[in-house]
Image 1 (cartoon, one colour):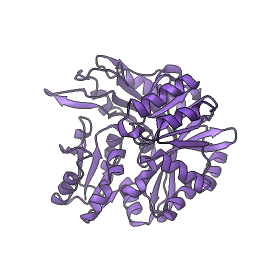
Image 2: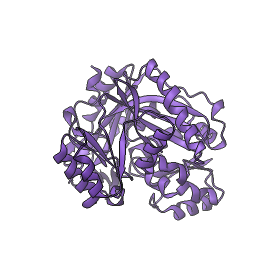
Image 3: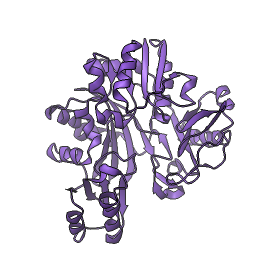
Image 4: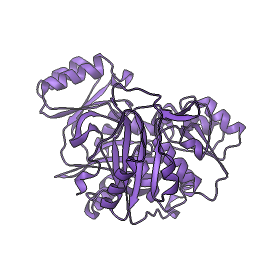
Length: 421
């Protein structure tokens, strides 16, 4: 069969690699792809938000399955466009992708269906938000309602920071229309854990846990980013946490969406906070996480294409999702200055070592070909992932592998997974 993957980052590289292992697949396309993905798939020069062009390409080239990697096209309705042409596509429709597309919607859903989350208020005017901050308790959390590349969340330690945050989101429009509406919510403390899941509208199957590092600098300092590294599994996601989430969060979310007439098929990413009072939902995403995908999929035993098809066909209950009894760590190599100002076009060297070593992966996030060379083309450039028998070995392997790659301005955190020992 022919498969098309939509997106061009490290997440999509990990998805393409996993699809390439399927015995069912003869040909993979990726739109737009990147320099690393080009080794496994034919890259197509169509942007992820060119919905009609993507569907026309799939129709013309008789694509059997399209997998949507990114949030923007999902929230814009790419699945609806494909389905209108009778094309098979993996991902939630627009009315279900709102689970990620609107923080206010997801918070209201959790309140209505008694799914544990932080207390919150929603604001559509800066004046009302500022008035609320006069009596709020601190720290507090401000969230842009819409999509903001994983960066529209501000943790404010005092009223002054919160006032500046409202100005940034609602008045200055740092994230465009994503800040037209904001959520101000209770600040929770505890370990953050990410759990990905496959959903077919009624059945949910949980993948292995992971833990992300969002801040740009060591010791969780610096600005929020799309993710500087991750590890899987999380030692803090215990059997007790799993039991609680299965009872009060996972299936309840799927059932809530169905009850709202928003049947969800695809990936639900649960961002959890393990508080003293038990697990709470921080956020939902409607697609694979990045860079979580880069540590979760290398550990997955299943043929992922079979799982995708089961989600589309509503037969996920017949699939047993299995993962290796090992661990993986991903360290993101970024461009110096990320997530603010950074340069592009720097030549990258050292890829050849990964082709020779088993259990080491170099997932391209922001790369492109230029004059016959692979150069940097984004803030997050590569995800260096390694597998080991446990988290300690995987972490040591991942940091060893970061030394194989070189480019001007190479930057990384040195404490990814340090909390594990």
